[in-house]
Amino acid sequence: MTDQLLDYARRYADAFADRDGVAATPLDGLIILRETAPSMLQYAVSKPLVALVLQGSKRVTMGSSTFDFGAGDSLLITTDVPTVSQITAASQILPYYSLVLELSPEIISDLVGEIGPAPIEQERPVRVDPTEDEVAGAALRILRLLDRPAALAVLGRQLVRELHYWLLRSSHGGAIRALGVADSHARRIARAVAILRERYSETVRIEALASAAGMSLSAFHTHFRAITSLTPLQFQKQLRLIEARRRMLALGEAVSNAAYGVGYESVPQFTREYGRLFGQPPARDIRDARGRLNIAA
Image 1 (cartoon, helix red, strand yellow):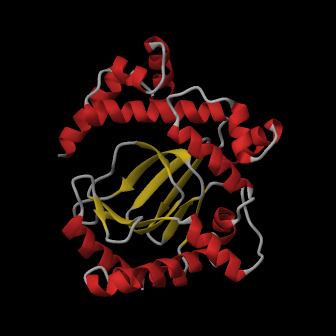
Image 2 (image 1 turned 60 degrees about the horizontal axis):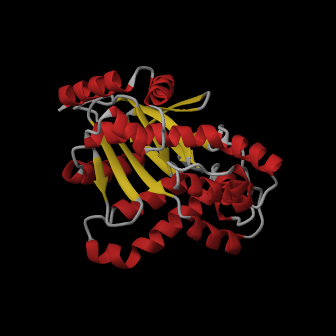
C-alpha cells in the first residue's frame, strides 16, 4: 500500500507541482509536496494539519522540541503554532514527497458526535507517529481519483471525511478529537489564536483574548502556553516577524517598511528581535535567502 501511495503521489506531483514544490488538488485543503533537494529553514505558523511522508525526510522544530521523521511517518499539528521546518533528505533521483491535509474542525466535530465519548489530548500540539494502514488506505483511495475528476467531484468529500475518521481512530486520535470538542482547551485557545492571526499588527489586550477563549486570565495564560509553547505576546511577536520576513523575501519590501507594516514602531527593536528569531539581521538574512533561492533555481 505504501508503494502504491507513493506511486500515485509521485505521478500527480511530478505533473502539477509549481516552482515551490506544491501540487494543489481539486479538494480543498489537500496538497502534495515535492522537493528535489534539501531545503533551507522555513518559518511558518501552520493551521492544524496532518502530513503523511511518503519519501525523503524532514525536521520540524517547535519551541524546544525537535522532530525528525521520514517515509512511513505522519506529522500532526493540532493548533496554530510557529514552527521551523527543513527537508533533510531529497534529491533529483529520490525527491521528497508528502501528502498534506488541513484538518477540518467541522468534519471532526460531526464525527466526534457520531463516534461518541473518548479521551482527548490537548497539551502536545506537534507529534510524529508511524502512519497506520487504515489512514494510508483512505489516502490512497483519494489519490486514485485525482485523475478521474468526475468521480472525485462526487466522492471526494466523502473520502476526505473517511480519512478524518481513520485519523480519529489512529494513535493521533485523542489530539485530533480535541479539535472537534467545542469546549476543549484546544478549541478555546484556537479562538484567541484566530484573533492574533487576524490582528497581528495591532495591540491586542490579553483580557480580550481570555474573554474570547472563555477563560480567566490565569487559566488563559496557563493553557495558551501549554498548547502553543509560547505566551500570547511571544506568539504575536513571532507572527509579526514571520510576516515581515515573507514581505521582504516575496514582495521585496524594505526593512523599515516591513517593520512598520507588521506593527513595530522602532526599526532597531525590529532588527534586534528579528536577529534573535532568524539568527542574523534582516537585510543579511534576506540577501542570503535570495542567494540560496537563486542557486536552487
